[in-house]
Image (tube, rainbow, N blue to C red):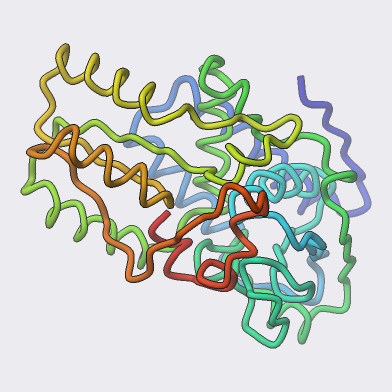
Length: 294
């Protein structure tokens, strides 16, 4: 259960945030597509004009040089929820500190905003330039204790729907990326809909086995599971995503007529013996296209 505390000093703004949260919860369980559109319009009306003078902002900076994009994402979503309830507008910052995504180059634009829309359409640069009420945190892993847990979400439908709707409202994927994905889908699948998606990310985790993280199965187990599902559902195509070229080659040979993949311009030849994080690979660090594909 989420505990909600309202500070009445900024009643109107916090009341709006509370209403948004309630509407998301209702939307998760009861609301039809038609009503969902009405809720979207309510959001737009509440925050129609950007108010840098009265709104309070919190800049969530990620000081982690080993974390991948979706490690940042799940923690950021938890922080967005926490600080919305406190009356802040959260802004995610992947610029200030060196990390794998910006290639340790803090002179780049905020990489987060290439992939996702900030809450209510703000951006880091404008907030820093125009707002007087700005607070910053740089250790969200300790401060924001609640975020989507990959161990729970596959099995707990209520949590999955809540975080899905919350992320869709407050940190949606950029429309340009969605449109690009539709084009790729049409190109790969020829409008066929019966597709099995197989994700085998985390080659480095197979070698390093970090504590508390899921490890992808070996290729023989993947082939066995894919074959079992394909026999049952007779898929038109099998879409396989992985940074491991060895896995790609083996799966392609196992399902030569059905396998579909997005070909990367650069092959990642990971050395299992070195036992280093994939993000430190020179072909991965700061490679925006790599993150878009995978």
